[in-house]
Length: 278
Image (cartoon, rainbow, N blue to C red; front, side):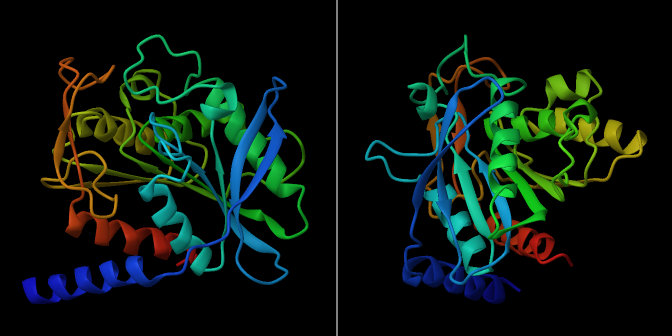
């Protein structure tokens, strides 16, 4: 079994190194408050129409210091484009002149308000395009962006414009404490993936959230990975401690982050299956 897993890791690593870069187009669209949101759009070859993924970044934003997509988002986006999906990556922070918010306590761009507006605006932007399948949008988020996904799935955010809702949602290691306490059950099928050793956004509240949502009749698939920490799905990120974070499980501002190869491989398999509609 270990040899098989090792072989799979080598294949995934080789794919990441050899896959050609996918062209990125900068686009802009207004949200409901009139803020112009900048996003990167990645398209498969051909005329479409294509199913699409809206991908919401974490507290660090979607780009690095060189203005490039961070490796986690780029890795996932290129996989999705290779499978025939368009990918839109709105940047809620850079669009407002902000950098990373991971160490900021008093945030002006909140998961439950501004970022939800951005997600809904991204949906409207894609559904207005003839090369996108309006009925096949998946909402994905990581960490802070995953928390946005949970808020965006509240019943009160159901679209009222006559266009189709999101088809499904995927949340990687969100902070679930507030949505669980508020009993905000998702209106759409949700897959939630988190590491059991995550000490930044701990799994306990997310497990409680899933139980609450399932009891309310919602479709929530909760997957946790023993030993995995925050950012387990990032490609080739050595395990390390981050410090000075605004919000962590124990309030210390310290949390471990890094790749868990087995958890990453399983998450890739699960997400591929979901997007293929299986």
